[in-house]
Image (cartoon, rainbow, N blue to C red):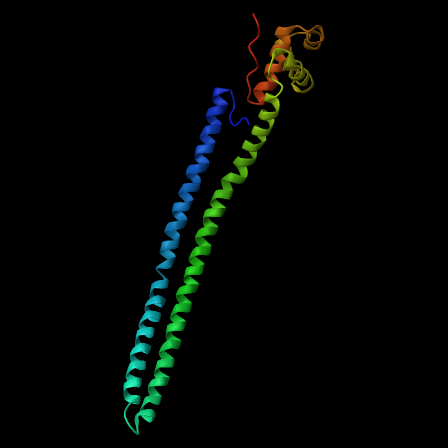
Length: 204
């Protein structure tokens, strides 16, 4: 697998792009964590209410049990305490539900922010990198020797603009048919540079 171009300037741009993707991702993960922490501050009142109401319900239950132990009148006097305990537990459940809702919202917003921020750059950069790696890896299989350059020279004749071909030779097609290695090498170099590869050195 060919990850980076053989051409120094292009390789530097690819490495810079990959590093920026990593830094961009880490930056927005940090922002998402900070957002989560800020939103979770809104859950503090609900959690405090739930905790206080549960403690109150426990105290009321203890008081009700103590009063319920009084002979003859204990059961009658303890009944209101049961009602107050149930009310306190209802308040605790409501407070906990609020805290849970805030926690869910904090998690959803922070994850959504991180994913969208990552995708905003990755959706542009990753397809470019994958396309380069596929083309460069495929091309590298045909660049083992100068004899393999005929294919790339032929592609150059078919794909390169005429004014580019004219800078190489007045008759590039004829030179390719005659097997003139310097011209073939120059034509192949045009295609290989587009794929991010360097051709083998021309003998002599």
